[in-house]
Amino acid sequence: MEQLKKTWLLQPHKRPKLLIVDDQPTNIRVLHELFREDCDVFMATSGEQAITVCLAQIPDLVLLDVVMDGVDGHEVCRRLKADPATQDIPVIFVTAKQQDSDEVLGLELGAVDFISKPINPIVVRARVRTHLTLKLQNDLLRSMALLDGLTGVANRRKFDEEISADWRQCFREQKPLSLILADVDFFKRYNDQYGHQAGDSCLRSVAQALSETVRRPYDLVARYGGEEFACLLPTTSHAGAVEIAEKMQANVRALAIEHSTSDADHVVTISLGVATVTPTGVLAFEALIDAADMQLYEAKNAGRARVASVEM
Image (cartoon, rainbow, N blue to C red):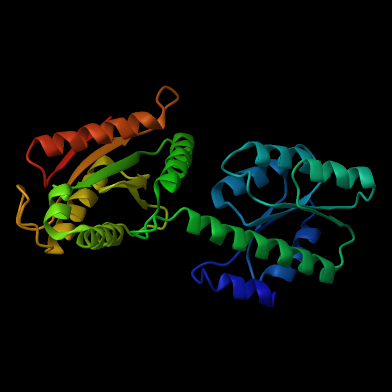
């Protein structure tokens, strides 16, 4: 798996996640032994369990048996490909069925490969290595396309994808989802006074200060547009989100970037709007954005360089 390791050096904090699905424990043990040194291996012994693990872990590849009691492999693949949260997970069918029609059906359902039982360890390792490498390379290219070129944080497209996914997850778990919208105060005046290059440098510094405030890997700081930033905080209470917003405000002020034409302070400051909601079937995530935007307006209207918040 040497090429896979080289590809993964670009993301050294992670190892590939591999899900093995088979209702025969012996088959799972054989595949687990093949990949435990190179991957974080997850296991499922039924179709329903496989879907649950996929939603919870979002593996990089699934080795999926076809013939299982209850929900079979074909139905698992159909459900994974129908759900936006799991549709990009590559699936390899591992099955004793060897008819051409079986392979064609698997590929039509969205599988990327088809391995026959009894397995040949060399063949299985080679095919898993190939598809994991492709997945990791595609993830890297996609992540680069979802970064803001100026500030290095996530871009608006990434934010739109994440808030939709976070909304669905928090709805399933009935956990709160918090959103912070932040705006650099009197930024047009800053550009007019110090020039656009200084303005770009200011935005980069603000983005870094905001990013350093959040710690969890699933929290997201994104450039929402112009001098406005957004921070998504899944499973975060209203009080916790307000605390983070206040830290963001303090961290930006601590940069001590001179802003002589600001009416809020002599240094660069930000105004922040915070909204928190536990998603329901009645609301859509746009309601959370509207609420945070309204709080941002309230913060600006109250004099800027402050936090305004609401719990929906």
